[in-house]
Image 1 (cartoon, rainbow, N blue to C red):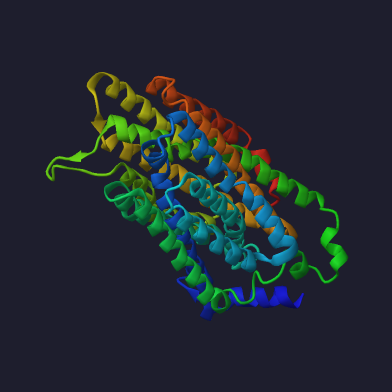
Image 2: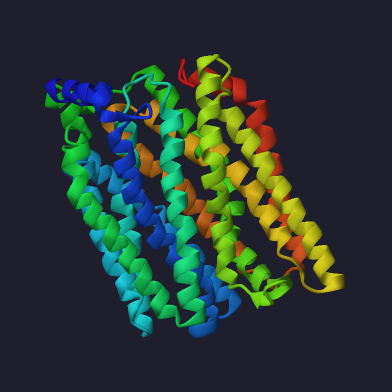
Length: 445
């Protein structure tokens, strides 16, 4: 297996590492940062654009938002399969970046057909891009490397630096000047990420992701289709179990771009008193990524230190903690909603508190989930199973959008009580079944 050996040597070469991690991690960090800038810049404006510019009803806007954000996470299943069987991760990332760039620039056109065409380009492009860049991050580390969870948490910071900048830049332009200026800026962000990838893919990831996984990992082509072992089947089952729990987290978390945006627009006092300035609604979309930037290094260090002391909680326990935290965040929303019904608009500090607990929850679930898929998935199915992992977001985003469409049909306290109960119950089950799930991981934490 000369190619695999070369890849492992590249991963372990101390000259290719910075602060204990391969240099390729920081290259992929930069590419993902700009891709997420484009995605979250557009997402911060999408619901407002549909309601205020295209004049969609709240229910229709919620449905379109849910279908779009859902399909964005379904197509990685196809992109992962194509990478594993035909093109390899690196070529798929290139195709995806190009399609997404075209999609963002199509949003600049005001006509409705361009709007739906743009969403189509973004959906397909994301399918090629998203599972394969995460797979490349996993390939930077040899099997059993305790730095992997930490590396994915650092990579996750790249996602959130882009997500933090995007609403401030794209949101300001979109709400203060014109929506299409915000969309154009998102397109420029994707262009920057595309150019960085062209420049660095062979400098920092030369020995990984060049060919389909089946060809890289087996001497004989017929071995690509050999039956899975019992251990492999149980590890794959764990991926699907954790995927199931993550759905409940994402249904709640993805209210940020829909119902929480509407609450911020209608029920939140956004005036900063000493400046006498009302900040744009889209700025709230920067709060969660800002907290990620602040807390991700602490979580990355914490996972490494706990791993070194053999006290790192298992992935199911991390998921359980994350689900309880997001449940608590929506308890805050229920309280804020009750106050707004009697006293009018509430302080913006309520939403900041909600996003703080969203962040703590997210750091227990999302980067951990990405890392665990790369550890549990058989090598020949790495990108496919990463795409399958993102299918949880498809189900969650579709459900979240349809649920957000009912925002005007229920009282706000009743509306926000639903995610409180869903995530609390899911967190309880994740905690109860943590030990048998860990057993099926067969020594992988």
